[in-house]
Image 1 (cartoon, one colour):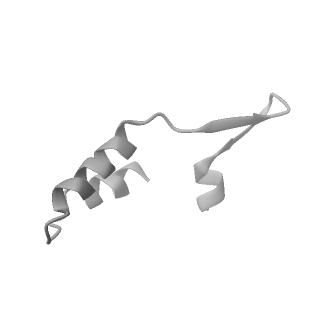
Image 2 (cartoon, rainbow, N blue to C red):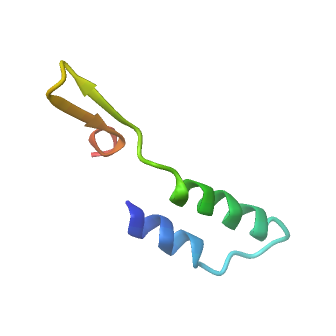
Length: 51
C-alpha cells in the first residue's frame, strides 16, 4: 500500500488543486499506521480490512 501511495504522489495530476492533493498524500505517507490489538495477541490493521 505504501508503494501505491508513492505512485499516486508522483503521478502528474492536472488542475489547480494538484498541490493540495500532493500535500494530502504526503500527510498520509508520514502518518504512523493505525494498529489495534484484539485480546493482546491478534493484530488488526488497515491492511486486514483492505484485503
